[in-house]
Each structure stands twice: as structure tokens, then as C-alpha cells.
Amino acid sequence: MSDNLQHQINTHRRRVDVEYSDFSIRELIAMVERRELHAAPIYQRKFRWDEVAESRLVESILLGLPVPSIFVATNEDYTWEIVDGLQRLSTLIHFVSEDHDLLTMIGKTTPLKIKGLEGLSEMNGKRFADLNRELQLYFGRRALRVTALSDKSDKNVRFDLFERLNRGAVALTAQEVRSCVHQGLFNNLLEQLASDERTRRLIKLQSSHENDGTREELALKFFAYLHNRGAFRGKVTEFLNDFMADGAPQLDPQASEDLFFAAVEHALRATGGGPLLRPRVAVTPQNQLEAVLVGIAEVIRGGKEPRVPSPGWQEDPELVAGSTGATNTANKLRQRVDRAVALFSPEGDDA
Image (cartoon, rainbow, N blue to C red; front, side, top):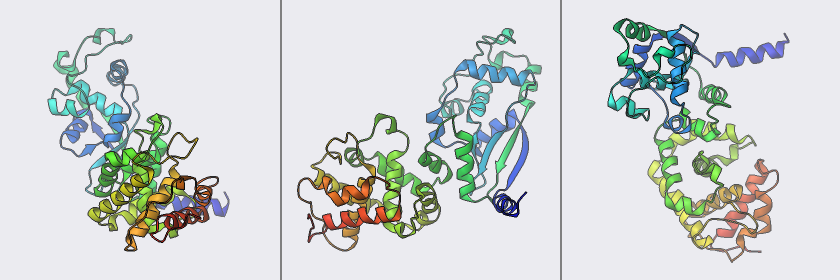
């Protein structure tokens, strides 16, 4: 093994701290009840097993077949966030628990009734409560391995773990992963800004992007480019991850909300109240939108009242040039933001 490769492995391993534990099914369900183990809402919205798939997991546990480890990440308050294994854990709750609140939390109203099994066909039609006491005890005491990324691991490792384990399964976008990794006041603010009707009027998305965190990421880009674009080096995901971890906690939530909506409302005045579009473009050009909102905010932060540019400003050649092509470079970002500032400054520059 080369010295350089060994150094890379050693460096990255030092950023990871993992612990392994075995918990009985009853213990895991009790941890969920006590809110010691939970899942971000985005997972609950994204992916559901049907009752046949759930029944097969119950069958595997009863037969003593191997069940994959549940992966969790440790939060700052030492609770655990489920990274991979939500459907397995939800199935256990659905089968064992009769607690209304717990069932509601996983989107169910009644306990699981087993169906579709061929091996243990005698289980079909049965609920956990229908099993004799011996089988209930056996099932409840079965252990599952929990692999926990500890609080000692840095946020980039945590982000990478969420992304790797869910790739191809839940298919989360980068922003949806961020919302799981960086839960808290700023993430709540992003969701609030993204869901506001003003934001939704300004941003027209393809239907496939309506509920995948795209608007939340656009709000995040607004703050990251406004406050820290000098640090941008072309790697958008890494840049936004770093800002979410380090820059966002320094912002004043109320002042940030006010500035964002001031920029959105002025952009709506400039578009005539509808989405920001260019001719022959059916959805909002996101790079251009980022520049426009940041540019308006820079004018406001400079103590000036932004103006509404002349009609057709969305096709401004310099603004479009900075918003198309190889857009994820520091030079392109600077070009489009500087041009947006010039277009919306009160002295004006429509040339």
C-alpha cells in the first residue's frame, strides 16, 4: 500500500467513531416510545413497505434468519437518529405495539396482521396479540445489531453516511440528507421559507422536484452565497454542508427571515407577481434566481431601496451568461451576483 493511500485512510478513519450494540426488539420499541431513537420526518414521507414486505421481516425474525444492522447517528443531545433501518424498525412497532400514539407516529392506525407468507403460512391473518405467550416472549427478546456513528464523528462523515446508506433506497437529495444531519432552528427556518406561498409563487419547479428539498436548498444557497460566497471554490455540496454546519448557527433567525422575504417580495414585483422565468424556459432557472435574490439582498443591506429593472431584464446577456454554462465556478458566481446587484441598484444599469 502506498504511503499516500495509507495517509488518506488514516486521516479519514480518525474522523469516524462507530459503536456497536445489540438490543432486543422490545428494547428498541421502548427507545422509540421514550424518544431516544427517532427518524427525521423526511424519511417517513419518502418510503413505505407494504404489509407483505413487513410480514416477511417478521417471518425472518421468527425463523432466526439474519437481519441487517440498523444504522444510527448520535445527535448532540445523545438521542439516536435512524440513518438506515427505518422500515425494519417501523415494522417491529407496527407488529408488536398497540399504542395508538406510537402507531400514529409511523403512519398506522391498527397493528399489523400478517399476510402473504408461504413458509410460515400458519401466521397469515395473525397479529402479535394472537400469538401464545411463548412466541411473544421469543419474538420480543430477539436481538438486532445497532451500529451507531457517535457524536465524535464530524458532520461531513455523518452526511456521507446518510448519503451512502440511502443511495438507491430512499433516494434522498443532498438537501434532504442535510435536513436529517443538521436538524434544528436553521433547518426549520429553511422549511418555513420554502413552504411560504410567496416563495412558491416565485419559484416554478418540475413536478418531480416539488417535494425533494429543492426550494429549501435554494433558500440555503441564498444565505450561503450572501454571507460566505468568498469561500466558494466550485464544490456546491461541500460548500453548503460547511455553511449549514458552521455559518448558519451564527445567523439571527428573525433578521434572516425578514431579509429573505424582502428579497423574494421585490423579485416578485420585478416579475409581475409570477415565477421568475426566461423565454423558452418552462421552469425557474435556479442559478439566475440565486443571483437575483442575493443581488437584491446586497442592495438592501447597503441601505438602499432596490429598483425594478426595465422589462426584459430576465434576458440580460451578462446575467444569463453568468447563470448558464459551467455555472459552478467562483468566477461565474461572482459574475451573476455582481450583475444582479447592478440591475437592482437604485442608480440602475440596464445596459
